[in-house]
Length: 141
Image (cartoon, rainbow, N blue to C red):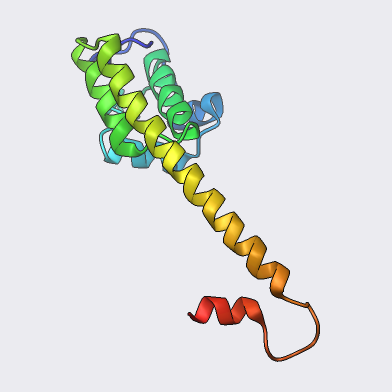
């Protein structure tokens, strides 16, 4: 997937702004992921600048893609812990993924119920310039 983080960066590294550009990630989001230890602290130059490498790029892309797929921070943290330990098995990853899939399916079912209620409620509304509105009445229940 991506190499685990090392303590040293060889060659020329990336600044945080470069990392943001390479991944399409907001600078504040990168800071947040570092703060909550999703992204490990990068090594620093002698003058104190953070230096990121391709491993950081890969890890951040992994996190961003996971977020696009709806994985929570805690779910991603679990996946990353498996990867960081280097002991992950496909079975463990599949179990975490199947739990997430069940959550996604439950959300889809909830959204379908919400859609049905909203559509029925909106259909009762005449849309005329009247003070009484079935939508407001349904929300007030």
